[in-house]
Length: 340
Image (cartoon, rainbow, N blue to C red; front, side, top):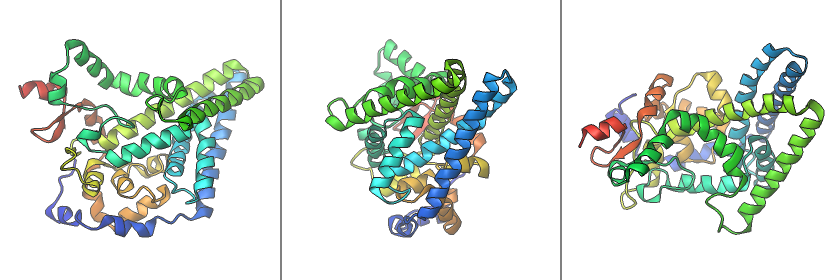
C-alpha cells in the first residue's frame, strides 16, 4: 500500500466538494447506453446458460461467470440511481433503481435509506451500524464474553463474510426491512413489492425454462455477484490505511478522502464494477456518475496516491478485523492479542 507524500497530504486539503461539482452532470445519452450494454448482455448470457443446461451442454454453464459480472454492474447502476446521479432525474433514477432491484434481489428504497446513512457517517466510531460491515474496537472486543468473541470471529471469517454472508443477505435478510421495522410504511412497501416482483419474475422464468434450469443458473449468478459485491464493499473501507474517528473529531471531507480506498483495479474490472473502486472520490461526491469517476483521477492524479489498494494488497485486508484506537489503525486478531 502506498504511503501518502507531504505533497499529497497538502493537496488533500483542497476544497474537493467545489472541485468535484463540475463532474456531477451526467450525459443522459451515455447513461442510457451504459444501461443497455449492461442489461442486454446479462439477459443474453442468462438465456444461453439456461439453454446449455436444458440441452445437457454443461460446459456452457461457464457463462454464469460473466453473467455474474454483469449482475455486479447492474447493482452499480442501481447504486448510482440511489444517489440520483445516473440520470440526475429523481423519478427516472428511482424507478430504474426499483426495477434493477428485482434483478439484484435488493429492495431499492430500503437499500437507498441505509446507504444514505452509510455515506453520512462512514468512518465515525460513534455512528457505526446501518449500512456498514460490523467493526469493533479492540477495547469493545475485549469486553465481550467468550460467546460474543466467538460470534464476532465467525462473522469476520472469510467463509462467512464472503460466502455464507451474501447468501443470507441477498436471498433471506433483504426479504424483510431488517433494521427499519419502525421506519414507517416505505420500507415495508419497498420490501414487499420487491418480493412480489421477484416471485412473479421467477414464476415466469420457471414457466419457460423449468425449475432446474432456473436454480442451476440463477442462484449461482446471484451468489457469485453477491460475494463480489460484499468483497468490494469490504475493501473500500476495511483497509490498512483507513481512518476512523470519534464524533467530536469526525469531519466529512477528511473521512471520505482517507476512510475510503482507491481500489486500483485492471480496466476490465473497473468496467464491470462501475468504477466503484474510486471510492474515496465517490464518498467525496456521490453525485458524480460512475462513468465519470476515472475523469476525476485523470484530472487530479494526486488522488491516485491516497488510500491506494492493489489487488494483491486487498488480499491482505482479509485479516483486518478490529480498530485499534491507540494505534489508530485496523489490526488483526493476532495483532490485538499481541498488544495486551
